[in-house]
Each structure stands twice: as structure tokens, then as C-alpha cells.
Image (tube, rainbow, N blue to C red; front, side, top):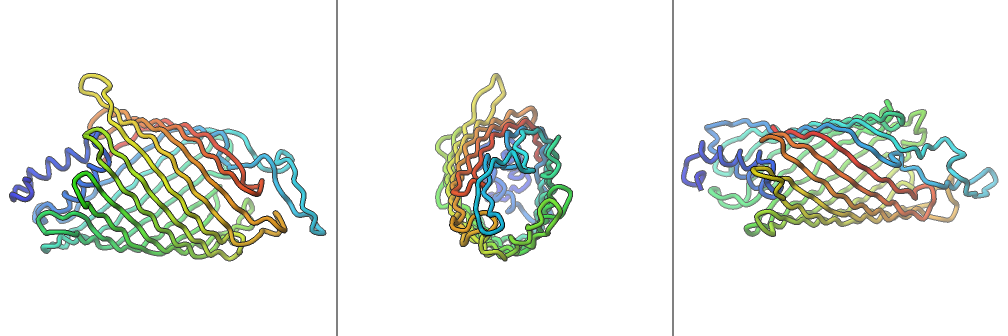
Length: 355
């Protein structure tokens, strides 16, 4: 209202309060960020915002190790053996994790309020014992953001982007990715937000002493996701999502088609006078079908997987910009081949800040 009336400074104050409020539903944060992008460009043409988090995490099987492994011996004889006889660790472990992500937006002015947007993420995870899966990830995206709808009351945006990322795993390069895509957001009605993304990525994997066949996965990846957010009440919102991924790798046994869906619910609860927490629960499913057999694993069985995941998270605000995050999660990866059949339980405790 204040933005449409021309009082941009007061509109900015209210929108920033909405974005930084610890108990604000995510759908409200997204709407507030979109509105904030339309504040009078004469006030501030460049804006930076983001989040950072760090904490400790426990996992029962972080390596995704199976109980049994299929091997094809010389002469073409396949056998299944207990994975305890191999150098595959199924130990549980603790890790320290940290990440920071940010967005830098520069307004180009004009009635459409187009902005150039650069976003990036840096994340790391260090295990107490399983150093072979320590990870460092860095990635970034860049592209213009065009607002949709009327100039006075935009109801969405479209953003083409280019991207690049790199992942180190176990102190060795694992893959470098580059490509681009399109982000779309639309608000068809009050309390309903739709988002979507389509992207093409080229992933170049690197062999290492720990992963000598990693380059088999090098190839083209096409991903598409869509999510719908619904504001059910002032304190409750829901989301449903779909995803699709198509991988065309160097080795046919790494090429695959994956389809999935997810659903979640978040609710703000009273913790006491002037204090509220945010409870989130959700689940996800993904089906992956691979194109060919891996002759070192099986001569007849193509890899097929059904991955199920459920989680519960609780965010406890401790100040305007800081909160304590807790999360529990269970994953089941059911596979036709024993090499990829595993489950993993996760619990984490961390601190999050918004800026």
C-alpha cells in the first residue's frame, strides 16, 4: 500500500520487517522480497541479502553404504558378497557443516524495474572419521530479472541465468558444472505462489584414487522443477512440488531418467510470551531408471531405484535475525541392485542468520 502510494522509505521498512521476522512463512518472505525489488530505484540501486548457517550433524550411514555388493568376477560370474568384506564403511559419523548464500541485485531502472541479479552459495561439510566424503561446494548464477504484471503491482518475475559450480569430495575434485536456465515465479491469487525452474548443466567429473571411475558420469543434465505454495491460514502454509531430471552420461549405465514429487507443511507455534517457533514437516519421493547394465556389477539387471524421504524441522528464533534450527530426517533408497540399496537417518542442530 505504501509503495503504491509513493512512500518508498516506509514501504521498505515494512517489507524488511516481513523478510527478517523469524516466524514469517516462507511464502510471505518470497512475496516481500519481490515487492522490495520494486522500491523506488532512486533510493538504492544495488542491494545485497542472504543467509548463513552452521552446526553439527549426525548420520547413521552418511556414505550410503549397502549391506551387500554385487560383483562380476573374471569369466563373467556374478556374485553377491557382504560389504563388510570390502573397503566400504557403513559406520555412523558426526560432521560439522556450514554454508552461506547471498544475492546481489542491481536495478536497471525503468518502469519494468528490471534488475541484474548475481547469487552464490558456498557450503562445506567435514566429518569426524569419514574424510573421504568431506565436501566443499561453491556455485553461482547470474542473469537479469524481469518483473511480471502491472508496473505498480508486479505479481511475479522471469529470470534467465547462466551458472557454474564446483564440488570437491574427499579433498579431491569431483565435478565442475556449467550451464544455464530459466526461473519463473507467479502469484495467480492472494495466498498462492507458483515457482518453476528449467536448467541445462554440463557436468565434468574427475577421477581420483578414491573414485577412479568418476568420469563415467560426465555428461549433460537437464532438470525441471515446479513448486506451489499455499497460505492456508495466517500461521500455516503448504507446498507441493514435482521434479524431473534427465542425464546423458559417458557411460550408459550412468544415464538415467528421474521423476519425483514432494509435499510439505509449516506451522507457526507459540512458545511463550512474545516467542514463536516454526515447525516444518515434509516428504519426498524419486524414481530413477538407468539406461543400461554396469558390467562390473551385473550382466543382466539394470539399475532401478525408489528413494523415499521424510523429515521434521523446528526453527526457534532467538533474535530478529538469528534462529536455532533442528532437523531429523530418514532416507530409504530401495534399489534392484544391492550396491545401491541403503538407508540413512540424520539429525542436526545449528544456528542460522539472515542479512
